[in-house]
Length: 110
Image 1: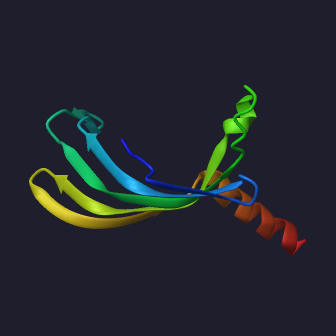
Image 2: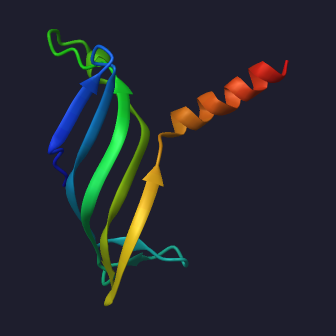
């Protein structure tokens, strides 16, 4: 569960910067021997932030008006895994952005 406390739209509602708290509990995990481990609980809480590209036109019921792509986002927070407390930092992006990057490298090399 997360809540964007700050949500700023840029460039005619195409770019969106967000920041806010999040809370996540994972309780069903797949182990290395391909069995579900019902006893392992991972609790995570912290701050999310990132930059999202997409169309945010809510005036019509078109599906494409609400599609967004995570350009880059990060999380910083606290994680509890089976009695071990840690702090962590995570950066992520959508796979679509990586595909576009490699495609642009291939096109520019021709």
